[in-house]
Amino acid sequence: MNALEAREITVRFGGLVAVSDATVEVPATGFTGLIGPNGAGKTTLFNVVGGFLAPERGRVLLGGRDVTRTAPAGRAKLGLGRTFQRLELFGRMSVFDNLLVAAEAGASRLGLAADLLNLPVRRSEERRCARIALDMLDSLDLGWARDRRASDLPVGTARILELGRALCRNPSMLLLDEPSSGLDSAETEVLAGLLRRINAERGVSILLVEHDMDLVMDVCRDIYVLDFGRMIARGAPAQVKADPAVRAAYLGEEDDAAPAAPAGS
Ligand SMILES: Nc1ncnc2c1ncn2[C@@H]1O[C@H](COP(=O)(O)OP(=O)(O)O)[C@@H](O)[C@H]1O
Ligand SMILES: [Mg+2]
Picture 1 (cartoon, rainbow, N blue to C red):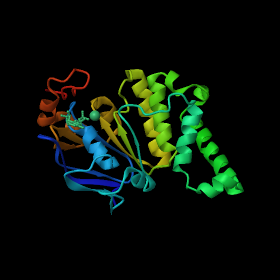
Picture 2 (cartoon, helix red, strand yellow; picture 1 turned 45 degrees about the horizontal axis):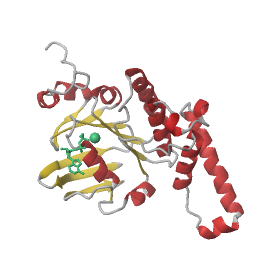
Picture 3 (tube, rainbow, N blue to C red; picture 1 turned 120 degrees about the horizontal axis):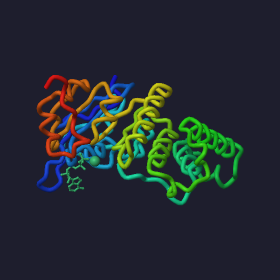
Picture 4 (cartoon, rainbow, N blue to C red; picture 1 turned 180 degrees about the vertical axis):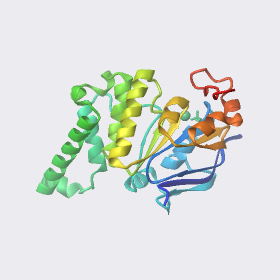
């Protein structure tokens, strides 16, 4: 069964059709890519999947279950994690506390009574969350930054911290919106390695939404291409790279985002 399906999604902003009859299927493991030029509708589709935006038409299924009308928090409980194109960290908190808050948000709610009475169950839950946060520091090589304020981090590290926050909730399906945004090529390399490791170690399914093709081509075996809200191509990296419609869609984009010419052309 697919981890995620967005079926025939249409979103309109006034007169503008931002996403038009778009379908994406994401299997339970591995990487799936969603690319397209700026304004193609990637973030809009991402927001529909996350539950931040209701589609005019279409359905969203998580693990086969219809969540089209489920709020973001409900989708998170069903195992959907996400990071945003614009970073959403607690800037004044330390790296460790950012992870701890995320782990606590993902932990089962014990209720006000347990909080007020400081019950043992509450304290053991706190220890468990601290353990999750420490393990995450370790697994993302963020130990050196443990006590730094999030707002003082270089953007590459901040992106990794945001990834860690999403992982602290132990998602089965992870949506990443332009995780390489603002990163240089060396930082993007580090991110790619980290994503591969997370994917292999945790068996989490990842939907990678990216404007830049390189990262997606590097890690994804199956890639969807949006242009002006329409899904214009789907396939393996080499296939998508050579697709005339994809090449046309990226024409006029800056060079680093455009696919390289296929060999022999
Ligand atoms: N809240 C909104 N209100 C009106 N138009 C929007 C809104 N969000 C996005 N759009 C428009 O929808 C289209 C798709 O945007 P977006 O999903 O952000 O594209 P991408 O993430 O692929 O760059 C663009 O034309 C954008 O200007
Ligand atoms: Mg976007």
